[in-house]
Image (cartoon, rainbow, N blue to C red; front, side, top):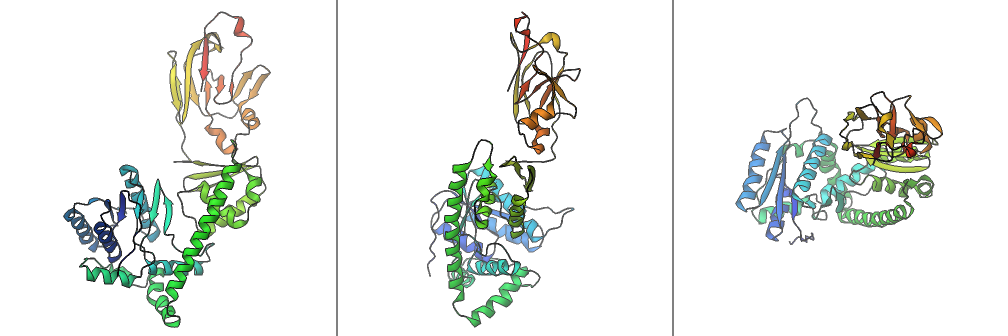
Length: 414
């Protein structure tokens, strides 16, 4: 039989493990003259993996197909299925970023789809919709062109076209839930209702199409109501629960969510408090004064080191903030400053001199409605005595009416 493969005519990354599914996929795409780069992950857990990695490389080299490989190390870590998957996809994302290839192709097939639907059902997932044929990933998309073809069809193709593969012996075991579904439940369903496979997969396809329509609606809805301060919480609260889940997907686009994570997000939205936050991986969603914002935090515990500024001044960087120090006829008189200056995070008790008197830095940030969790990230400039000269992004100190004095001043700009 023939396989219908509809993929973008662009450079592709193809994940190949050495098993029948991925070897057939690589063979089909090579025969169709796609621009391929193979990505292979050696999980470092089975002795047979060495031979599989060698076979995948030999296949690529014999056809002059580019290949990138990695071997996972597990010293001090537990190599669970979830951990393997996380690190595998992190490698795929890394290669996508380094090569500029925007399309990752995976060899999931119809049996994988059926197993996933049943697993979602018995786990009580929010959406029983299986594996998407196409979804966003990193800087591009994941494609699964074999999702409507059975495992048996792939075996038949491999034998008819002399496609060599390695069989992972762990697939025959009963340790994992997916294997139990594959060997015990699916054959029973096939006996009870022949042809159920096609009906179930078609239902999943219809469900995905419906979800994409709903996601597109919510995306437009969010874009229409987004403001400089963030997304108004009142706007989100008007949406049905299913659509609120799409808001989470839009705020954190590079992550798949469990039913528990969706429910936690919905519960968090209902909590009546002026300021709070929730983390999903390295993404921080904040709820502040009636608005939702989302920022990426490579390390939420990161503490920036203070930056010292000498009398030569110039342009300095503190985190993502760029600050320019220069001499001018306006600003803070040098006679009121003791060098060196320091850019640092605000300390409790910091105060700044303004035209109306001295004011706490913390009060300035509260009045500016800076989320509590972000206030420690707002840099301040102090001199050698600890005197606050500026709250970057908000205020510069005022030491009387120095405009009339003909003396050099410090200008602080951001």
